[in-house]
Length: 46
Image (cartoon, rainbow, N blue to C red; front, top):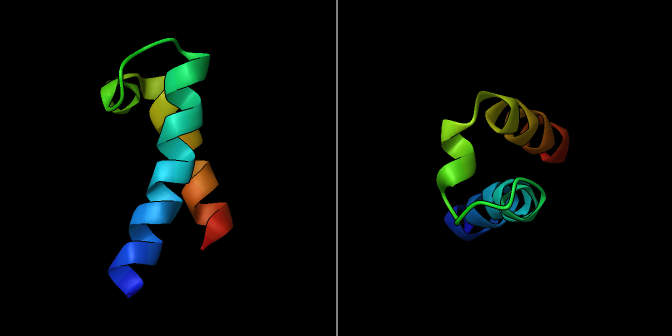
């Protein structure tokens, strides 16, 4: 069950950024600015 919650938190960081940066799912990980935002969001949620 922990894996499901972890995946949810990560997706909560990634999906909004795909819309903001107008890139396909997974691409924000290759954008340094987006990666920093994902890290902050995940840290805040955990």
